[in-house]
Length: 227
Picture (spheres, rainbow, N blue to C red):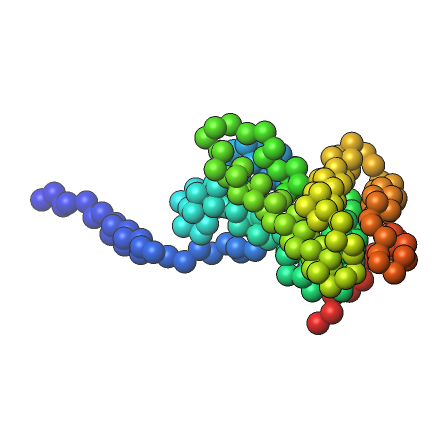
C-alpha cells in the first residue's frame, strides 16, 4: 500500500504591523549624508534604502515618502545652526549676526562632513515636480533672514541703532553672505578664509548711536550655548 508523502507544515503567517528593527537615528544620518553630498534630486530611493539598510516598505513605514524623509533630515541638520529663537535671545542684533555667520562657517567646513550647507545651497534649481519642497527650503532661508530683521528692528526701537537703519536690507545682506559661505566652501575656501570674509562683512554694520564701532571678530570656535 502506497503512503502519502509527508509534507512540512506551512510557515506561520508573518504578523502585521511589526516594529522596525533598524536604528532610526543611524538611518537618518545615512540619509543626511547622501542628501548633503548629492542633493535631493541626485539621490534615488534605491540608493537611500541601500545606504540605510532597509527595504522600501520599511522606509515608508518609518518616515513616509522620500520628501518626508528629506524633511526629517533637514530638521536633524538644522539643530546645529542658528534658529529664530537664538536670534531673539542674542543681546544685540550685531551679536546675532556674528553668531549666525560664525555657525555658518563651522557648518560648511566641518571635518568629516560634506562641504557646503544643505539649507543655504539646497534645491536652488529644481524640477517642477519638486517645486513645493523647494518652497519649503526657501521658507527656512527666509525665516532666518526675517528673524535677524526683527532683531535689528528691536535694536532700532531700543535706541541701539539709528532710526535710519534699513533693517530689511541689512538682514538680507547678512543672509546673502551666509549663503555665499556655502558656495565658497564648495569651491575650496578654508574655514580661516571664510571667518575673514564674515568679519569683513560685519564691518558694514552701522555704528551705534554711542558712536562705537562694531566688534567684528569671528572666533574659530563658537562659544558654548548657555544652559
